[in-house]
Amino acid sequence: MATITQQALSKLAGIFAREVPFNRVLGLEFRDLDPEKCVLSFKMKDELVGNFVTGVLHGGVISAALDMAGGTMAAVSVMHSNPLTHITELGRKLARLSTIDIRVDYLQPGRGEEYFATATMLRTGSRVAVVRMELRNETDTLIAVATGTYMVA
Figure 1 (cartoon, rainbow, N blue to C red):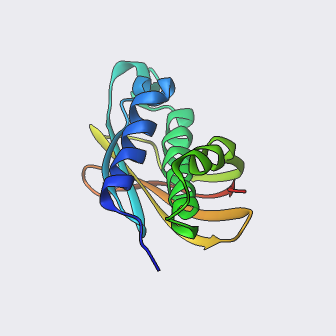
Figure 2: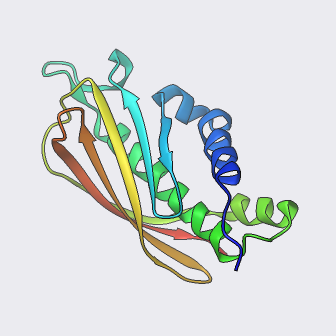
């Protein structure tokens, strides 16, 4: 069976990082992407503060970063299910990829200078993928965990 090439994964990461305007606003950058995991990072900036008194990261930013990492892993599962799929058909499948549900557990305030959202696949089927995500800061403090369900058909 053919496998996903690193070139295809790099292209996917580039598209998600550059073509999704909100990802550019957040400053999301891909650190690692392979069939087993996705790692995104972003730096703290004033526009991402949720509580101006304490200066912590906005909960919506946390959720969005985790969702992007989870959605990327779901996209990888689409690519992995048939790596020989023609690029046009793959594009159609990726265009239909969407979040069905995401549950975020905020464990502590989002303090830090840089954040890392990681995602790993829990289960992938022909129509739905379930992904586990975590957000940590530069000192490896666990800030939030999430589980996302994504439509992949």
